[in-house]
Length: 153
Image 1: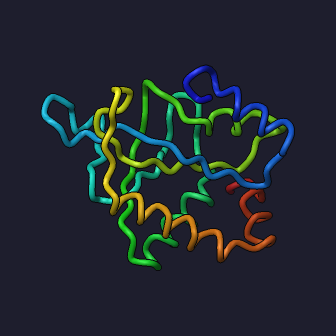
Image 2: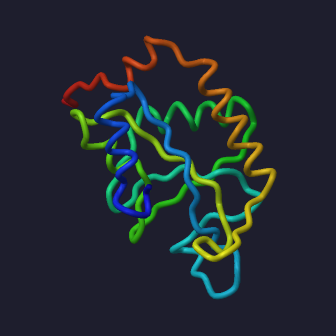
């Protein structure tokens, strides 16, 4: 329900109270004529996108680092993107229930919000492998570490 105000994410954040959140979404692939690559840097076939921020969400930097390390360890492609005009469900998890460690991974998609979109099977497979690799190494200690903060001197 991201398109109608993040209501599903709000319900999940309030009632499930997840320890860590990985949002799976799509994002505009900018590798078509007429779209500015600087605004939409994701390209089909170059891996899933890790959303660095959108208008409602800022990811947990420890989660970002862990996913970058997992991608590198498994030799998986990973792109980076931002979204100034749209939002993922991550924004709701940032603020509900005291906030949750959250990160958003997106599949680059051509013709997003049209009656038919296009993704790369290689990107889909890389995203699945990345999530599987990350989750199989996740421990209670790592989950707790995502929420541990200290003041920088």
